[in-house]
Each structure stands twice: as C-alpha cells, then as structure tokens.
Amino acid sequence: MSKTLHSHGQETLIAALVAARKASGLTQTDLAVRLRCHQSLIARIESGQRRIDVVELVILARATGLDIAAVLAAIAREVPAEAGL
Image (cartoon, rainbow, N blue to C red; front, side, top):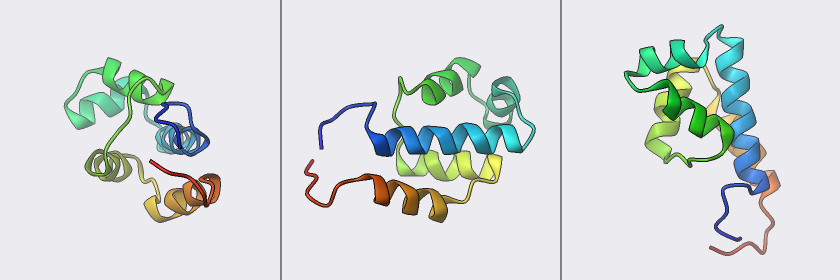
C-alpha cells in the first residue's frame, strides 16, 4: 500500500469520523473544545491532511460515540489482501 493520505481505508476512516461528529451534534469547534485542541487540527484530520494514530482514534471515538470496531471492519474490507507497507 502506498503511504498516501488518500487511500480508500483512510477515506473510510475520515468519513466515519465526520459522520460520528455530526451525529453527535458537534461542530468542529465544539469537538476541539471538548478535546482541548485547535479547531484547525480537527479540520486537518477531517480533510485528510493529517493522519491520526490509534490513541488519537480512541480519543476521537470516545468524544463522538464512534464505534471503532465497526470502522476498523470497514477499513479492513477496503485494504487489499496483497497490500504492503
């Protein structure tokens, strides 16, 4: 798999993060306040300009009610079996 910010799996993750934030009734600013970060960080994550690590995923999921297991299953379906690093 190429090291791109725009892989299918990454796009699936971003879509899930945005949907969870909106479903929880939060704006990017609301989420940033909740997480004690800048709104611009949330914007960069949601626009695909910045990847997140697994710990950040857990924090974002807790803040928005995102079902991590469901998202990971969806991402696993997007990543080809022959993908490399």
